[in-house]
Length: 292
Image 1 (cartoon, rainbow, N blue to C red):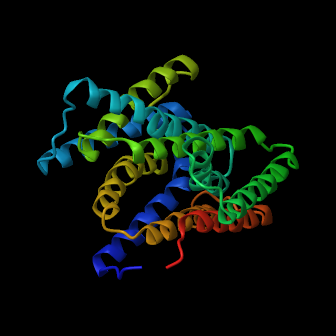
Image 2: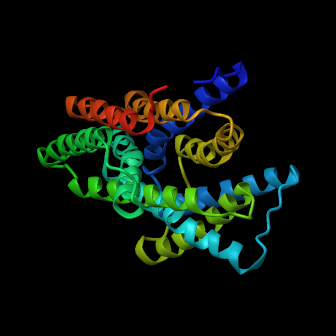
């Protein structure tokens, strides 16, 4: 593993904290917003913020030709619309930490999909990862079924979201892009926000836009931090980080989500949550951490 500079280390720590804290902060927003209205509003706000920032840095923002627009639509469907749309429904049904654990099973499903459809080799490490993920999901499903107010459907929503993210990640890695990645993300967010807003108008009750101070603060966080600053930091680090360092960051996100939930929304993890978190961390490490 190459040595990180102090600036990269600070950026990585900030990014991990931002992504982890975002899970319980979303629960604050959902106290007074419906899931799809929340997602559409914050995603569009973040997309506009990123568009202004990247344009000021002379990034070409407008897709040119049918191929670049096709990339926006095809890659945006699983990466943004599927992941963000399905995951917010999962968050609405589950404790924040539990949703984070399930969402970050994505790396294992991405590797498994590569084996099933792209002829990558099934290794012992992948077998360990799949077994660990299934053990974690079983623990959480057992916990949900054991509570009168449990929501097993929330687990299904989060796994569908993780599957979409995994599929989108594979497609993104194999795509031959001509549109700058920054512009691609902005347009994927814009089109997905429009689609989610249309679904919100069809499926959810009319949303009132009068909120308490904590909910306004959570909305500002979602726009400025989750969809704004975190994306900027990620783009700055993505090309420079060693793959093993990226993996360690991904493993830390659900830990931050679980451990911060009691402080932010008063959701204390059960022993099943902690055990499932350990299973998912083992699984991510098995598929992403490489021997030197």
